[in-house]
Length: 70
Image 1 (cartoon, rainbow, N blue to C red):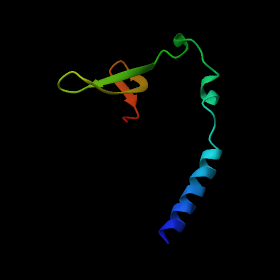
Image 2 (cartoon, rainbow, N blue to C red):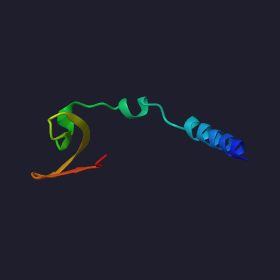
Image 3 (cartoon, helix red, strand yellow):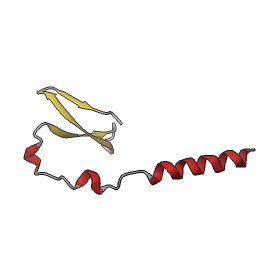
């Protein structure tokens, strides 16, 4: 029974993956940075100063930066 669900899951993932757009679909419309003045990058470090992760976002006000937070 478990093998049946693994096969169903694999077929489901293959169908979903087959419909994914290539990365070129989101990068072909590149414009110079000055076209998006309120887009930024936030970088996070741990207590010892080691890099942990980064995330892009939008500057909503001079002191509010909105990001997905992942």
